[in-house]
Length: 159
Image (cartoon, rainbow, N blue to C red; front, side, top):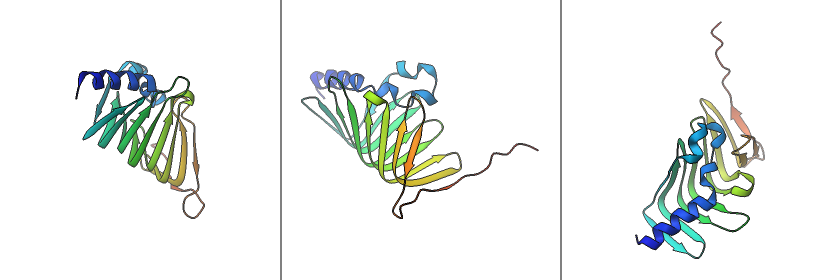
């Protein structure tokens, strides 16, 4: 990798706001944590950095992984698109899907396809999950049969 590509990657990832991925679930210092990235190949063209093959971004305890991650830095609205075997993992939950788009302007990640959300033993499935990383609010929409499905395990109270 050449020096200009490294500089471009740092500037683009910083502009994308990747530090805000999952800030609400993790330690307050997560936004200051370094961003580690890896992939089998990397391409940089214009305002787009693309990580190809086992692409992964890690910051603090949060991870975004996919077959392909492409970041687009624009003045008012930067975004990261993930395609193929997408996983967004925080200390508390794992979101899996076929495709995801993270938009920094509204702190939202939208995961589509065969979506599976797990938190502990609890599991919910659907076709589209909209998750706000700042507020931790989520909306899961229906799967192949038009319905959201899940299994929840009650907490043990020790009584």
